Image (cartoon, rainbow, N blue to C red; front, side, top):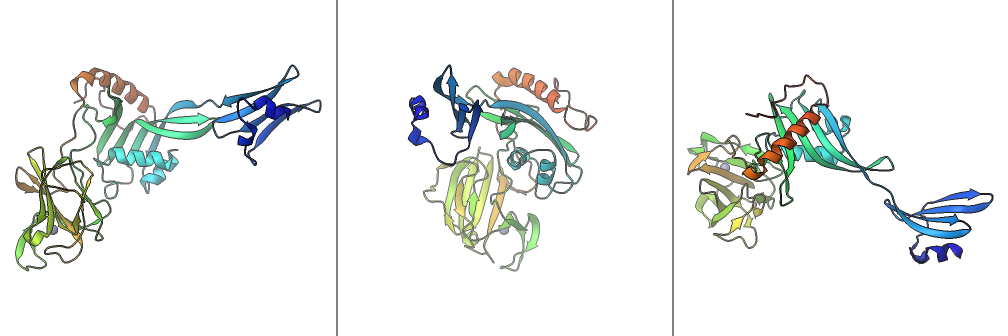
Length: 343
Ligand SMILES: [Zn+2]
């Protein structure tokens, strides 16, 4: 076949698959050109040029754009994201970025709003990929939160507040992902088993036995073992100042040893009801310099700030992105902080 011969060098004909769409161009009853899609990105084109049949591999150009979106919460974050033209993936990204400061499950209010500046990739005018988010604002509880994406010299991208501090906190708010709080921090309450009045110096998360328990911050295992009413318990120490306690576990993460370092989010054990517990739950404590604090309300420290040497480049980028972001949605939303002189 002349077609097969012409394309033998570019792509052997037995690599072609039946059922793929082809496009033909016919003039004067002769085939002038034929295009065959290899995949979404590439196609093969046979063309008759000066009586000879040639075959060439083509790549569809991928075009990148930066877009803005503005959304106001009526029912849910996802509904607002959808109305604003964000994909579910991007809305999820937005929730992750601000998840350190906003409790999207419990604290989102009607009238809260967001602005997003994000990248999309297009091919033939169709959106084929989106993200990352370059900058975003989220208004919640009378406060505007900001996140600026910044890539440092080692190529790591992260999101920063206007002051150049990572939006991430040194601690996760909750050690169990999907759970219900059944008992909060209180200086006084009746213990369900001991029946005596006792302080509850932690928070209880009800979850199924075996649910993974995450280290809420980077730290070192200080204790892993059995301890009275706590049953199986893990105690972590963080930057010498903080201690977290995870009690009533059904088991420990395999290989977890005392003295070992753990990373934020790492599974250290599993929910259970060892020790004095009425049902499967995690008892979690947060201590600052040995003193018990309410893990739900304690001011959590931010993760590391941007190193000094990046500050100038960050300021420049922040200025540029905030100005762009401000073009999304109503202009009188909230006075933007002075980008050249934040707090
Ligand atoms: Zn408890």
